Length: 496
Image 1 (tube, rainbow, N blue to C red):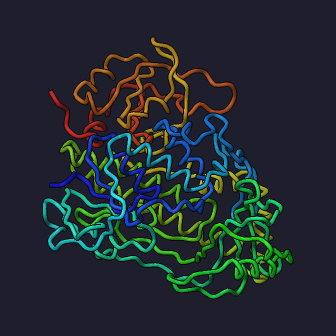
Image 2 (image 1 turned 45 degrees about the vertical axis):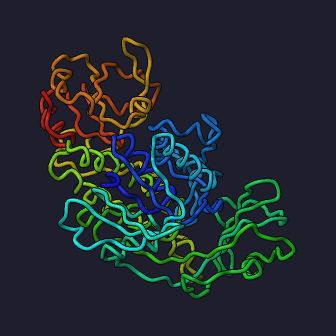
Image 3 (image 1 turned 120 degrees about the vertical axis):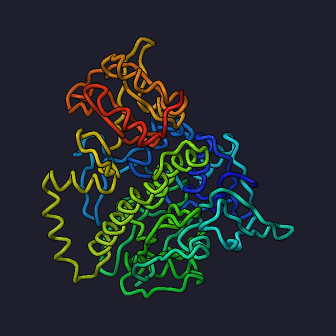
């Protein structure tokens, strides 16, 4: 066996998963066909829930802004703008962070944790018999030769045109592209910002400054047919589309890079086939609306990482790894639904104007704003647990300050190690005793929530809360009743 897990793809999702696996004690090899990162900015931030996940691993300060990370309270749904802070703790996410910065942060973190990243290694195929075997073997083209690698598990994090997905025989149903849209980092154009997009007669455009003299633009002209995946696009073509929509001539400028994307929408029918799993764009592709793509991939990785590491270590309870598909596939399906809806509203031609007007009316209601803010931010996700006895169960744990004998700490900081955390909020010896057999997998912390000024305390009425490594609540109660069963369900058998 060469390693515990092979990950194909060193984008944000693959690197996040690699770090999560190392925190869980698994050995990881990442193979990436590119010899070096592209350096392209592409995505420009991440959603509120993805920010929380980065914070739970202590990564936010690495983005260079620490506590001053630019957060936008204003967002949109299908181009209809509103203030996301109508949902407590919500916002549209971090803005102005190019994807290449996110990749750099995650690659440095993963490398520090001991991840073996092999660039210039191109995945070729999977050996026969992986579905029923006790390992999976792949062939890769290295700079010098074709080599074989064997691991307990293989994960495809290789994007929308995933070769791992195809090699493993995953179905990828959905709808094909109907239109082409452009994105570019243009120089010397001095564009006015259009952060949330502007719908004009012939299409939709967005613009955001990246650096002095550099602007990110997205150009969505009406009536532009879909293109083949291998096509290229020129700056001249993008400039012509920009002028057709805005009337502004940017042909005197240039571009650091140009590309195109589509509204193709597909989702793998299963996220796991035997010892092969899919994460991020390899599992789901969609119209990039609201910066949800990268963020959903990061959440996929956080959900899978601790479960796969426990499976490698032999501590996972039966069926734990299958909960990855069970929890994340519905989230992916909802992602596809909301991005398709946004595309219809934002990108539809004149025929969609009544729909835009109706959305404009509906979004005046606070309940509608809360619902849409929860959908796009990822803060409304609730995993089915089979135990609905407490409203916290299945939901993400909100950031809270705790006060204990050693002083103040935070739930966010307690999750840095990517282990389970049992919050003993009422100083109950029975709660602590119940978790004694899970030392090393679950950290027990006795502390009380620091009182909050105004708003609703999400921990109100809970004397103890069991938090999974990915920040979701596995169990909550007023005493130790049911805690042992929850520990066994999510963390396996106790050790003597």
